[in-house]
Image (cartoon, rainbow, N blue to C red; front, side, top):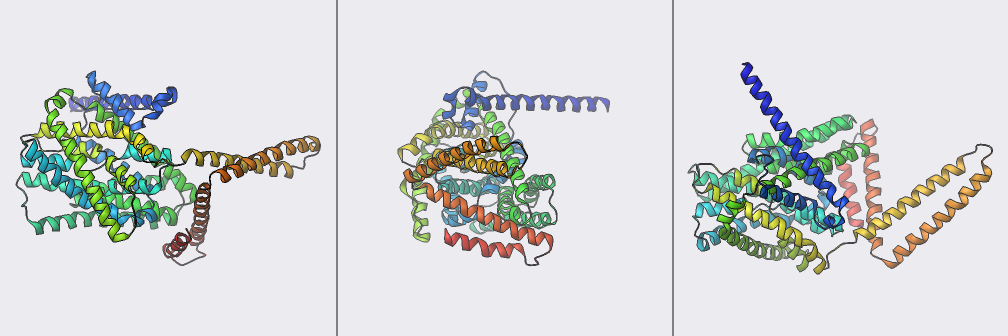
Length: 521
């Protein structure tokens, strides 16, 4: 008994040391862009992959990357954070193209890549299907982070994030079915496949919806930021585990919970202060998890294995890029014919080239049963393709945005917000100075007032000049004002409901408020 206890303690100590080592390396990489300006041109997650590759080349292995580590520990917080920050109004606007990309895009990707690998690379159909299914899930974390930094149109961000959130679930479901098919535990018949798909998706949406709405109404009864923050964390993991245990898609369950809590629960059950605390917590957690995942992806690369399967990797990369282009352009055309909402050709091109693969693909490849005859080939191919998408596509997305004139006006907005913040701060200083009636400070007060008023006039001139030179800035200002007014209105209703002064359900009131503001926009 004593021996078992000593062994367990040793294992825990070693795991803690490995975790601290990974964390130390990740945080060291995070500081590089602040020390060396050249590194600022590389998205942070890609920089982690490059450092991980350097460690792999030196044969320094930080930790073994298992599918359980990614799927059960890393994936739920990443999915929840993305869903929490995804605005339902924007998602609803582009729900048709997102669903087309996530459902039919996955089917086209699996079928197309598998056929090419089977016919051109001479790989067995079973192996080809598992490689294709592993690579069907997109993971544009580094791309969307770059989009926000550069101020790319929010619609493009929503399309990419929405597709990624939903096609993760579809890819995991498809992969699970193909593994079961190869092991002979299911039959390839249309009706069972359809029933299985609807049950897996239905259970995910059902469990996610139940947990999301339950927590939303529960948090109406109190305002305890740390408790509500903890509830969101528990909901992410519990939704995933419960849904998986019930035979549903944990990915779809977590996405559903995140969407409900981010768009509904945070409005009816959380104060503005609590929402800020929780949003900042999830921003930190996403940064923390991404730091570890992308570093370990690079660190797990086996250069010898990549060399042995280089031909298959090249064929897979070519097939994947061509098939995704076909899927994006065809499905976009279908979406436009249904919704009459245009998606420009440059935007379609970014959606095509920005379809990076990442942690989900790695986890699926690693979860292939050890009894499969070509398991190592599947893992090596998927790792090689993921590496290509992260380094080649990930590093060329910014030049492509510049070429297609899709770069936003983030620096301009940042400059405007800094001027406004300075103006508001000085106005408050002036109000405080004028309200200060202490005897003996009149001469200094008048001097300070003159200085502050002069600075305020200078700031107003700069703000007016910025608005005159960039008329599009007015759209941003208007959107910001509408958002602030809507938030104040929603928070006021929540305050009345919580205090018992209003018996009407807050959800129905917000449903009346939101459409009115959207019509005005």
